[in-house]
Length: 92
Image (cartoon, rainbow, N blue to C red):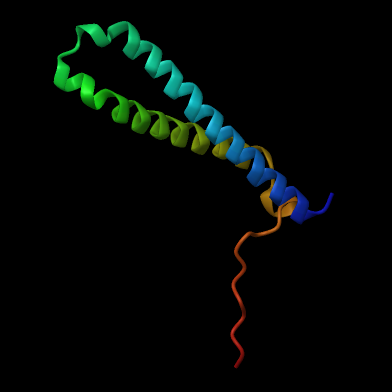
């Protein structure tokens, strides 16, 4: 495989990882909410669903960054991946 294929596969796998972590954390928080929701005041129950979604996104972002840092320590990115954004050289 060449660098471009590696880059595309990496982006696809990273996206799938991020979505899966978000969904799993969201479902876990919904289960916790289902168990503890009846003890919460009604005003808090109304905001719990959007808050659960935001927390799931934040946890997924932190997990993604941690996994990426671990990967960067183990793999030389320039050796296996093509840059996504390339600066164009100025003429002159």
